[in-house]
Length: 285
Ligand code: GLN
Image: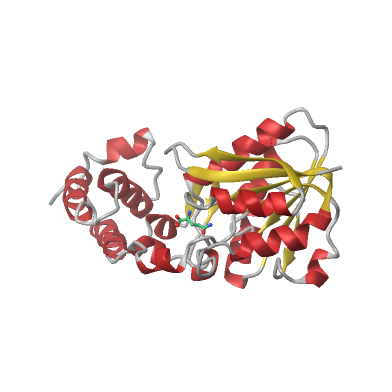
């Protein structure tokens, strides 16, 4: 007979063998899932002193096994937090990352005094960017465009749990017939796939479990920036902004690209780790 607390201790030891893991946090999250309790609750803390029951113990071992095989914690939990809200996630959709929260900070800073906004989120995935902006800014008309069926199911789930009024368009952001049907936007925001061919060779196991379509941006990682800037600048109102997440070494190229296409006030911003992570530019007019 052992207690849940002892189960956690054993699991932490095993999960520590994974290259990228916060073993203590992950063990608690997985036990919380097996117990159907929030691992931050006092009920959960209490439970750690109790003896285990067979079924929960088996369930917990099965969850740890999945994690030890490299499945991301976020997919096992089926949800993950982004900017203080919880998003449904799972196979087929990119997991919201903390780095991406920078895009929210930038947009909020630019638009905090605006009374109404037309926003388009390209390659929306889980919807974490668009839905967070719709929730935090005033009178947002939001359109989210996503190509992949697996991802769009999470997008709809998240839209529903946000009580969002957003339009969801299923399709390719590079498809001219979709582009021509979109409203003129104040802000086009996008976290495109931007990893390079070289990056793709050395992905950690957890990232390999994520959809390659959400990661790979062509040989130099810049394919989507080239196409999106060219194809979407006509959908921006004069003075409207295009805001991208970028890879840490892509700032110069993405900024030059936007300048070549006539954008002004093109700027780069760093994430909390000090890496270049976002570029914003404004359409003249
Ligand atoms: N930032 C992601 C990573 O490091 C890449 C996601 C993307 O290409 N937009 O895996």
